[in-house]
Structure formats: structure tokens, C-alpha cells
Length: 105
Image 1 (cartoon, one colour):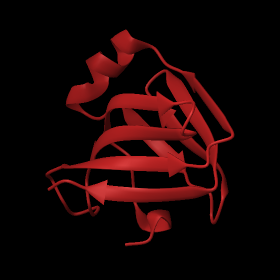
Image 2 (cartoon, rainbow, N blue to C red):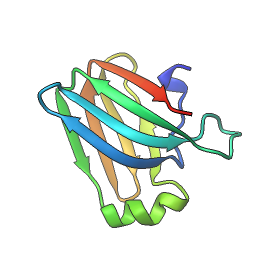
Image 3 (tube, one colour):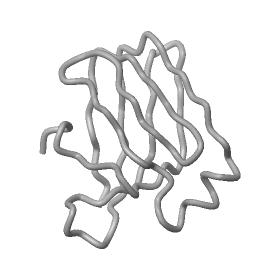
């Protein structure tokens, strides 16, 4: 599945790992693999060749919205560029050269 086809509405951001030396950001996200799916699958969203990373989030709101999904939407970069992930009361933007999704389910 192409990352442009991944829908993150109602997904849950579980954690973020930033490695400044390796220039990587890994988001642990549970998401619905299709619009019809009621169950979420666990995945790592790995951004490599990261040049900028910005996050403004409210931990209390992310926890409170985790039952329904604390990710409201995302706008992935088409090839390389800036990816925008909109959260309950916050956002993440990541400019990266590469992106991959590693499903764990």
C-alpha cells in the first residue's frame, strides 16, 4: 500500500522517537488499515534523512483522545518533503528524504 493511501483519521499516536545523529524520526501509531476496518493495527512510521522536525502536542489531550483516536488527519509528502500529522490539540511536521511503514500485525 502506498503511503498516500494510508488514512490516519482516528489513529492513535503511541510514541515518538527522535535520533538526531541518525536523522530519523519513528512514530509508533495504531491505525485502521482501511476505512471499513474497525480494528487498528500497530505500525512504525519511519522517517529517514530528516532535516526538520516540529511537534506541538498536549499530552493530556493525546491521552484523553486515545480511546477514539488522537490523530485527526495527515498530509503525507508525495515523494520527499514535509509530512504534516494533525493531532488532538497539536501537530507534527517532519521534512524527510525517505518514509516507510512497518506494520507489526
